[in-house]
Amino acid sequence: MKQIQIADSRNHVGEVVKIGAWVANKRSSGKIAFLQLRDGTAYFQGVVVKSEVPEEVFQLAKGLNQETSVWIIGEIREDARSKFGYEIGIQNIEVIGESHEYPITPKEHGTDFLMDHRHLWLRSSKQHAIMQIRNEIIRASYEFFNNHGFVKVDPPILTGSAPEGTTDLFETNYFDQKAYLSQSGQLYMEAAAMAMGRVFSFGPTFRAEKSKTRRHLIEFWMIEPEMAFMHQEESLEIQEQYVAYLVQNVLDHCDYALDVLGRDRSVLEKYTKLPYARISYDEAIERLQANGFDDIQWGDDFGSPHETFIANSFEQPVFIMNYPKAIKPFYMKPHPTRDDVVICADLIAPEGYGEIIGGSERATDYDYLLAQIKQHGLDEKEYAWYLDLRKYGTVPHSGFGLGLERTVTWIAGIDHVREASPFPRLLNRIYP
Image (tube, helix red, strand yellow):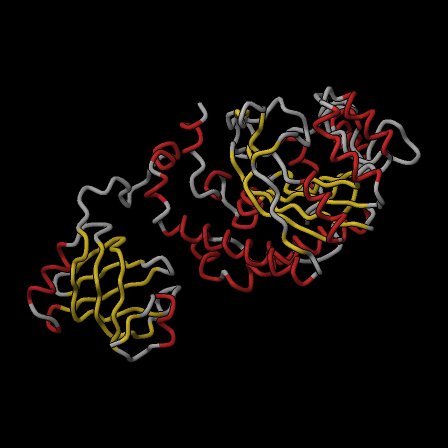
């Protein structure tokens, strides 16, 4: 008898197999007990017919509590009524670990309650689907960048300098020196790009401020590519190709998860069509003011309502380009004909999900960059290594960062960005 996982059921129809699983739910109708089983790969139904098993097996099936772990022995068969397409006709059950008074019952629970029980909420079918999509986006990211000649480089998580200032960083004592939990690997990735040409990183980043909206997390994961010999327009093409690639791979490989989440595939398919629209920051401000947004002026950063309005003007993600210099980080390349804006772009997702990518062409002039470091109140000594990149063979280079959790939230069509992160609330206890 072969031990299999639920996801492999299609390859074992008509065979008697053994599966390790948890009981997600159960119901019975007198002479038949139905068990909703999960094993981490998928969910499917187990059917126990009273007349086909010993009485003790049937009574055991009827008495199983939610989240009890079991060994199931039975025959795999097709089930056209279910989205999964297969079920198991159970012949025997062995309890591995009992479960009593599981706190997350099949009834409705509030978000705060579920977040406080995140370690258990991950077991639910919706959370399982979200994590499957998250996993596919990570897999497809590596595939995309490997296929486009990028090298994976891992920047440090403890850093001595900050790409965007230190006001929202977690500070720690690093052997009598100040160090910070990374808010971005970008500066290090610029150094790596000068050695490897095209590089990308994937790792955790931190912001030392409590999450105030569904769009923000204290800890989140970033994919950060950096590209030597590349101007901004070429970078935008890479960005839109990458995002379309992620969406297409979720469509291709996460069919069951999309069903569980009720995500409309026809909506996602629109996001695979290129190119995405590009509008300037100036035009975005004009659009907002012309449509009754009197709470924003040129020079202000966009809030959620502003981004949502702009996004709703298009059927696909949209790039907003060339923001005011005063509201962007020091390292962005100045515009060649304007002193008030820099060469950058944010990619705004449709359906009100906000910015999923921020990127720019990087400043290459040593004197300009040094002046910007001083103007932003940063320690010149801490950035001496970064300035070296402009002294020894500088080249045009561009890069961007994609926030994983917000991207998962958008593609999966879920309401709360914290659902796209495995353990988002634990950090609120660590960093009150």
